[in-house]
Image (cartoon, rainbow, N blue to C red; front, side, top):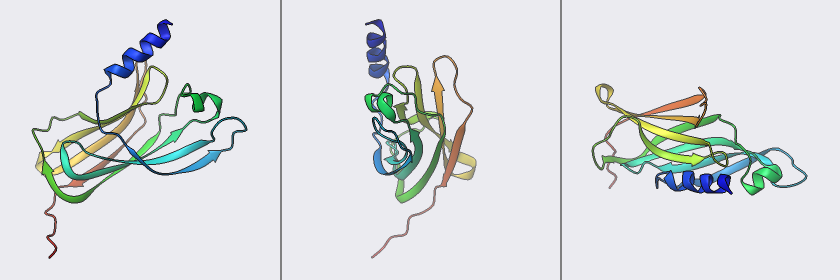
Length: 154
């Protein structure tokens, strides 16, 4: 019962960030019971910057535990963010702002994407990494977008 209450509290504590849209997936391991292990590709838009979409690929654990949401997903991920329209910053950007966060285990592990603004190079930098309450993972991936004028079509 305590574990269920702790899980609920952690779930409620996660900020209401952007929800990712699944673009596609491939199976990596066949499982007799439950869903297969797979790699998913998801897309999400930066909530503070119009004109930026990030694509995230990551492993999702299948099997019975994975199907019930009890398995822990691997820490590896890849990210590619792109300018998809005119870039418009909606407010003051703080370095290290979390733009996407999703739990990757029942309670203690999350995968998150944070944004940095490299003002001297006029670029947005996005970092994906996994953290855990006790011990995080050094595995990470980074992508950068130069802020360029968007061509006007007529």
